[in-house]
Length: 527
Figure 1 (cartoon, rainbow, N blue to C red):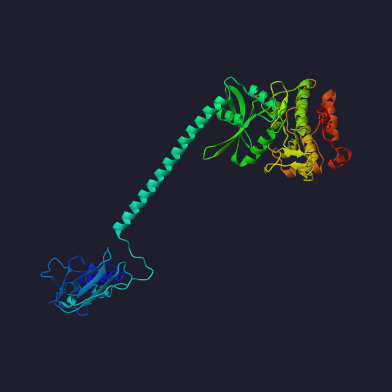
Figure 2: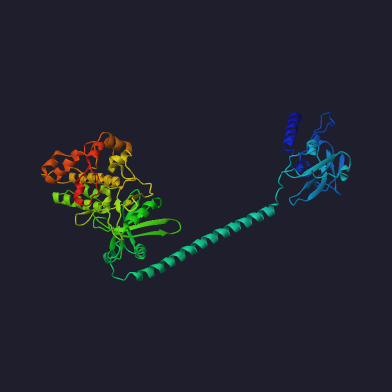
């Protein structure tokens, strides 16, 4: 049984030797923990049993150099296998010739070697005494396209150099940006100190604006605007919309509103700044403009628009929590009409004011002042009309007005974009819806209706173009007017015009004479 197991072990080792054909031949050499291979002549023991090849007596003497076993003497070793000589390329690319004894087991496979060895080498074997002394194997030619292995030390050196260079570059970049940041802060502080000297201590915003209004009426000088913008202290966020955020700020103790535009809304910021700085634009029912500025910190850009601060907030917020009497209703409606009329009116002169249409009138874009009047804000979509050239200056912004407040001709895309009068009529339609919101919150006989947005009972809370077009253009519907309005003189007038507005849009166009409004009272002609 032991002989049988030994034969099985020998067969397994032979198969492993085949698989390891591309490995270092030292695996089969004397003195290196090697294992031997088969010989056709199997010697017999004295009792007649076959002797295993690795146990056969050593009968061959070989010259050894570099692969000598521990029992070798005078560079001579004995084996029961074959003598060999091998030439191989070391890690430095130099050819080294060595020789020695190869045990019987696996010698046939090792002497054939493998063409897929990782290093270039050639091995030759022979079977006579000291025959390997005369063997002169040569290295195989390099395989085309196969990269040579890099020297490990050279590779480590190159990697270290690359890491050091990368670290040096990273440190240089960080130091450079820190230097730029500190330099920018020092320059900003220096400019701030210089600009503070430009505005005398004790000057209020009201004083500065009143001084500038005696001239062209186009707002504060740009240097003063930049100075104020730099000196603003942000207090807290008070609002957020699709264009950006609104913050409460302070300038020398005075409260101001700071509108911070998103970077993608640069066109809206530019347009609103341009409109506010139009000659003769300032009006008590237009939100008071103070300054505009762009702050670039390198990483991002901030677009600031600084205006008067009105703590009562928008008309939308005000109506939700406040009821009106008849006088308050008239005051709000009339002040809004005055502001809209000032926008629509062209003022002729050496430095005249062009006619302007808002295009996004709604209760959220009107602010409530302390005296109970309102002012119009958010002019980012406004269009200007030049009567000299008869051209309508439409902004490049991709923003559209609020769908709920869009006029029928805007919803069904029949508005003539080359006719400024069409934009004015669209504004008046939106203004009519705002008056309807105000009228609902007016107390009559101790009863007041809950605040609602126009068309609240006809379209979803976030209506689509299709929703609004179906209701306003196709069905010709308008906000519902309560019968209680007829008991009040003011609201009964509003009810008359809203009921007449149930006519279809095309019928109204035939009956209506389109004229530019020059008096706020004319705006009562609601669709």
